[in-house]
Length: 376
Image 1 (cartoon, helix red, strand yellow):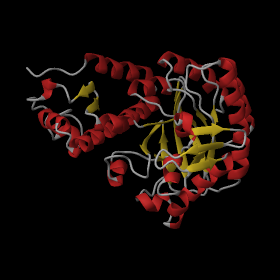
Image 2 (cartoon, helix red, strand yellow):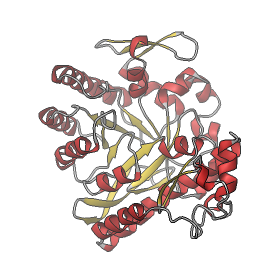
Image 3 (cartoon, helix red, strand yellow):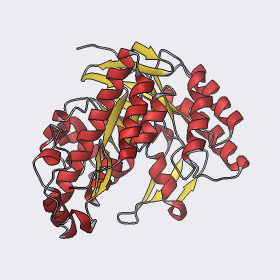
Image 4 (cartoon, helix red, strand yellow):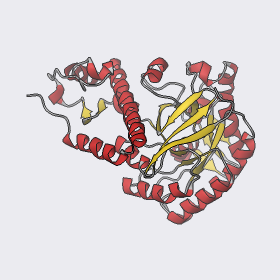
């Protein structure tokens, strides 16, 4: 156990980095994928399962938790770790992305954001200071600055205005966060798909000397090549000795290519959302269990997997569960998907340590391309 937040860079292979974040609640092995626990739950999963499949850290959602059950209530009940029975690191987002998605239900000013709850229409205000306060009440180990995220494509003038305000909000969040031993606040690089704005944002945040840096405002409608181009610009500008977090990303292919550019941390709802809709991620690529071709297929999703959901249930049974809208279908496929993501991350870490990340990436992509083999 350590009293302080510390990032150690353990190995490099090209721009790919193998590292470790140590905190009082445990170690986060990087590159890391954080399962999303939006409302204090990783959907369709027990927390013991989430830990057992290899997750070191989960993400909690400030916006949803402040609306229900409420940050003050969570604090009275012992904090988010105690509330949801997860005693390891928790990262909370700032709520900025969810507020962006409210569109007509919110108003943004220099002071912060005023918005209507999507739950009951009640009015709420979130300033940078209030966002940090909420994350503190939740007991988050890694807290994110409040930022304004612009959905792409957008005019450069709108992106610049948003980026500059996000920088001012980062300064206010830093002051509000203060000195919290063992915890960290990350800044968020904004700037849309405009190179010089990304550079300005990264430079200004670096001067704030924060404990970690996220790259936000990507995977919000732009093609993958645009996202990767922004990483090519931004990653080299961020401190080598601090963790880099690409927010809301993504697909397994996004992760492979982003690690190759120097990203250390990821989160995305995709594994559990896809599972609830009948889509499985496997080493053979994606498998849509809604497809009629699985109706009498007795094979498991992956006979080599150590995950019972992938190894012990036939595709025919999973197809039946999905087509019948049985809750067990979503549970099993979410389990499978999260296991696959964590196995992918372990493979990435091992490959970087061995100095063969490019080969690992090529072999993984080639196996996806070969696809799932039909039964004879």
